[in-house]
Length: 211
Image (cartoon, rainbow, N blue to C red):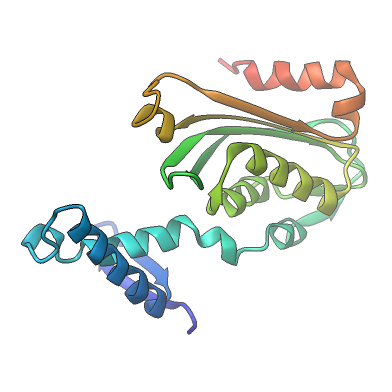
């Protein structure tokens, strides 16, 4: 079944919320969540929970819609020939993903750089690539590598650098319950791997303030 656009109300400023979801999948997942509520000792028929299974199913479909996206095609849609060979950095990209081990969120920021080799890409496409991979069940290490590899394989730049800093609710809410811990991962290709000076410049730029 194809995804269906559903309009959900209109705000005072004219904004219309559009939810895109597969009705068949929503119905199937919602049935399971109704059973889960019962297994947890709740009453899925009480007023506050009547629509919860459907809401959760819709939320999960949105949070994992990256499976339907092609990150390389996102980059290819805005590639331009350009004689520029200095570092391009997009930092502080918001990241929201779901840990595949406990299906709890992890979130933070990604800092990405590449050195063009004949082609540049529209700057908005880099955050879109991050979202395309993040909106799947993930581990931070794989997510970091997937972003790096997509940019490297699609743009063929002289090098790619990715650093990601995230907090994991599976560590904060359960398990060791360390609310202030931050996990940092990094992945490099090309010049960022072979040239310590280039890598150091990238790390300096992502920690520098423009104030």
